[in-house]
Length: 239
Image (cartoon, rainbow, N blue to C red; front, side, top):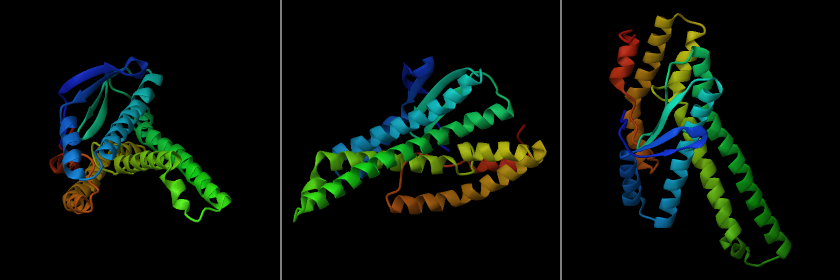
């Protein structure tokens, strides 16, 4: 997995949490402009929506930390996504809530913006029917139609991020939640082995799956799960 931990920019986010931006994010932006091949305005809009969605995802983790009394050292946004770094360790139960809040934020954003987008589209269809226009396509070139598209696009990005982050590989939220869930019913060493084995299979399948996705234009982040990490977990070589 590619992970950038060196910031090139920092600002204070909500709740006073330091938010850092990694240099690899610039590579992500340049790649999208290079490979987009479409309207630069839409490419820039997509990049902005993606970064905002990642930021809100990480703020979900940070919020869950803070309300449980766990201080947050920083949030990092980079080309492979982002992470929320705690200033101290948290209990397993605290971690469950902290980890889950990231995808929950994305799911809430997906639901809210999908509803708003659908409401605008429904209103446009009703206008078209009520007006009796022979060429109702005129309405769909309106500002309202553009707003509906943008809202739907933002919903799609957050839906994708929620599903993506719930994949059961480390260090994605799904891999962490899998391990934490197994700890409720299995011994720690067995939970580690099972988590590593599942992650190892997915990590091996990830590269051909990623190439297939890229071929269909579904490329989104610089992320490849670590095969050695999951192998070590499966062999119980991690503490």
